[in-house]
Image (cartoon, rainbow, N blue to C red; front, side, top):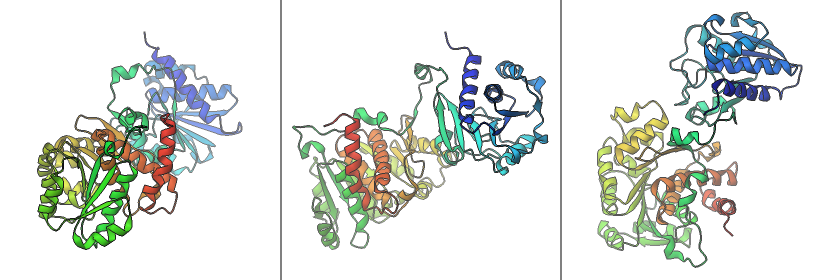
Length: 477
């Protein structure tokens, strides 16, 4: 037998009160309640805060007589006055509790609701949001009509995609997940397919060092480079693959790029390729099971021809120029995916839009999460849609949202390193979804370890510290 819904509301409102109670006792609290259960949480918080000695004013959007169910019961337990929002000067509040609308919002705010949210946003006062800032879509992270910036958001049981996807992530401020007594076993019923990208998600598949292991156990990755003018991108990818653990990394390159590659990183094996026949001869060795292509490679038919050579039976990571080479023809890339042993693509928003130009079902999906999922299904590949809220999606519907990328990760070449890291993990036989998710998390952690002012060259080196901490977490000595 489950926990009664009103008991859950009591705990939720108390959790909100606990957060507000961190403000000093003289603080004047204004709680704005909506007509549903979010408002019921607000009434509970008002009662608890009053019992703790706070001065609390409660305003209700709508008519008290129209409240029903648990929200009505919570309002009946509140013994203080319930005011009209219009009579309150929100600028005089010490803190505002936004308990108007939570994750159940089904349409854009308008009329009095939108006006009240805009007043709250303009007040300049700290805001504690219940579940989500009102007007924020819990599934997409998008603003529906209006939303106010919260200092902190209190949600329950688990976070929602809207807490992680921008602009929702920024509008939520700090997100606190309160335990209100919903058992973890509820996840067996919900069967979630969307996850926060954290090590527990991909730990079972993560390659760990073995005492009797050797470099050949850790796979051999190939990075295909462009010419001398653009080969820096491929060098970054190759370094990323090595630092991610690939046992060997070969860079297939035009002869004019040989001096630059040979001088840049001694552990990388440069292999001059005068033509596609040379590349085909190299790839005749089936031990070279993973190929990274795109960074600095050039766009067009020549790049597609190289991809066709590499695809059959191999694991591929395609980024940058490789993706632009399929602009507007995603079905051709889907054909490539069908011939591989696993494909990961790592577009930024611009590359994603070019690749799927004209594909309304993908580009007009209602959120970044939905667009990435739709793209993964369309291609039959793992899609990494990069950004502050990078989403990794697999064709089977699983998706992971990253939350650990610092702002200073947005620097030239960072994506090239990420593509190489994904290739390095694929080379170690990590499944594509788990490899992509792990690479994204490691990439963010490397940026945090490198710190402000980083350039892309710093990321592979910063991985050493990240791996040390990760191995400690996984109990590897």
